[in-house]
Length: 332
Image (tube, rainbow, N blue to C red):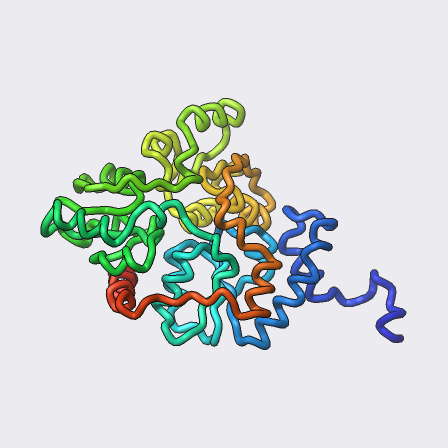
């Protein structure tokens, strides 16, 4: 019997149907119809371009679950970006992540689908600011959060992510550290380690908006909820949580299945992505969106692969220092 005459109930599911099953809990069928053409085109373009798509946990489900080859938090993306078997890397994330991928893969083409996909933390500090901090505090090591530009990484001793910040700081064996640019992450690490942090007044525009009062109000409405806070949140917010950790640590917490109701105090697409994979967990959903992450869309990714833009380049004089700081982090 020709395929066209096979009843739908008997026909083998198409690749797109199988992909939709991954996100059916969080993406309505009518909305999927708007995504399907771009997804099919992207899958073919990836094959033709020998490209991989690297997606951060804050990407929307149709990107995260349906077209991404590598998924995770900043630390996972940095690790997985090393030595990829591909000619092209498309960063479904923000610009500093694309720069980090380029630092670790200088011979590969790295694309960012939107030049407006920035970061309030990365924008808060410059290389000259780091040099001024070094002059003011001679001999104090500089630990730089990966949410920073290549020029700032190049001025640093070592990088960290929210997943390994405590371990990186403690590995230095010192009593004082310059930790930039996230003031709240630094203060949270100081509380955990007792090591004095010289901070910079940089904040994530998503996480700085959460307040202790909001956490208490959600608890009153959901007394059985487990509250998981990202360490980019203010310390007083983290103090209200049951658990604090990177997006990967939050994912691991949910996967353990010890709580049926969870509130993630972070960018809200994270809840959508976990809900797609954990149907028995009820997610209480505060919705603080990152405007920069949301500039990465299926049409933008498709256009990036069609036109090979926007290519990420790093000035040659920044490459050695920036790569050294990231590689020291990965080796620590």
